[in-house]
Image 1 (tube, rainbow, N blue to C red):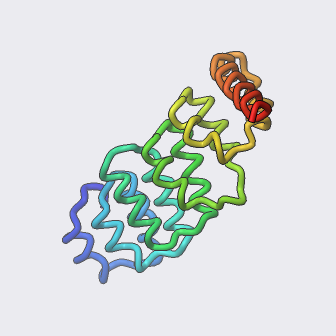
Image 2: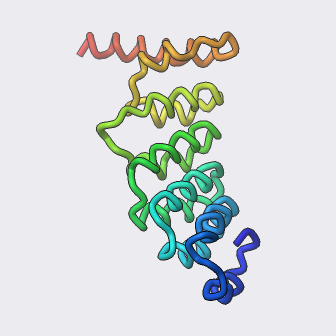
Length: 169
């Protein structure tokens, strides 16, 4: 699965205890961006295995990993796991992964922790993507480490500007 040898994985499937090995193989395939192997293993995996694979793929912003994200999301991986993957993508500053995962997230759930992780990672682009779906005030309060002061100022100034703009409207 790590090397992307689809035919080898296909041939080995009948010879192994699929339930015990598939989750690891799926996670490794997703982590290495092998979408064909992800497709091959999906029917043998439960939602938790798919969620772990989603988070593994979300650590990268390369085309092949984004394809793994799409394959897993199209399979119906639930919002619970998507939230974890969104936080992983934000933590790693993976803008395209955040952009891919965000439409599949639960709109009722604020993504303050994902915004916090993006802020602590110094990813302005991820912060911008997560801005409208997060409880910004909560994130400002969480940014207490002095090394996060520049990001905290950035968030506070944007937040203040939006508050002033809403008063004018």
